[in-house]
Length: 178
Image 1 (tube, rainbow, N blue to C red):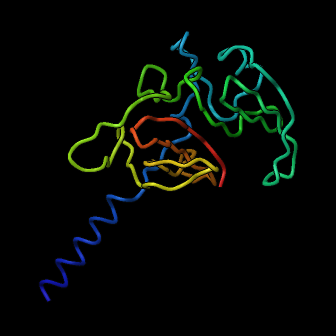
Image 2 (image 1 turned 45 degrees about the horizontal axis):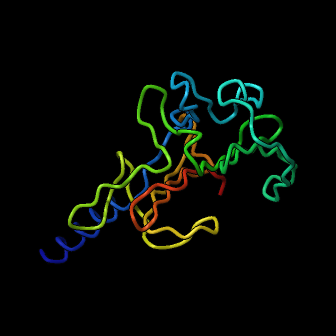
């Protein structure tokens, strides 16, 4: 009986370690590296995004099957920002022209590197590495941190994801919808 309880405890502890962190949507800003003192949040207008991040390289229409509506797609280099009804809705940062994180706080940048120890990495700046060697959004990765997103006490049908290559380099930072 003692062994069963010990095994139950160990499996429970391992399961807690592997669970994703829940991130408040108001803690995730898109930041212009040239002016690190301002960021834009989900729900920000396209006009405010341009004021903070600068003029996009390209603006086009994008049909969203999930929303059954046409979104505006703003491209900043390889990065994509999607606006639904003129509000920032989802984004995928794929180069270092935009940083992600908290103004004057924790920042994630494309090219950041995981710290490898004797085993495969288990966390990156407080976020659990909870997926290994798979594919997300048609991109292969070696390591990933996928996290739930909430707004205050309400869970959103969204995720915050960091993807790393086999060298441990961060190559995609995404806030997407499920």
